[in-house]
Length: 158
Image (tube, rainbow, N blue to C red):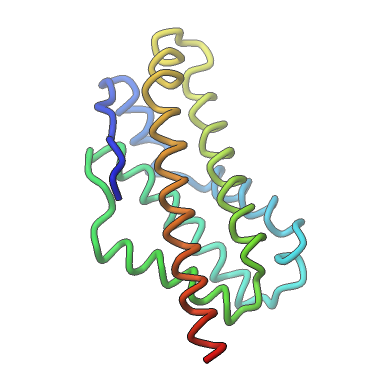
């Protein structure tokens, strides 16, 4: 993963830490959207639970990367890739998986916008520093999960 992580201000660090400590609102919004999408709404309860866990894990990876200034570890990436491999067996179409990433990144962005609603300094930091990183980060993660998904699909076909 070759993405440059921005150094965040103390004010944004404090607000990000609060959001990271309780990401339930973001996770719930993403989960609710996904469960209304084709490819997700008819899944078994056990698969929906797995998807909720993957949303939680993905959000925590994002917040941790900003707070620590480090990219996800190899172990974290392996755990993340496993979600992509499982989606093949759960019969979630790749198109739906990728749409889930777009929706997830959008909801995280919305949560960040809410952090800076009344603070022009934060708005500038979010717009010029965090948004490019968010887009790059989620693009790389979507590529990674796509690769895992396709490799698993290929293995299954063999």
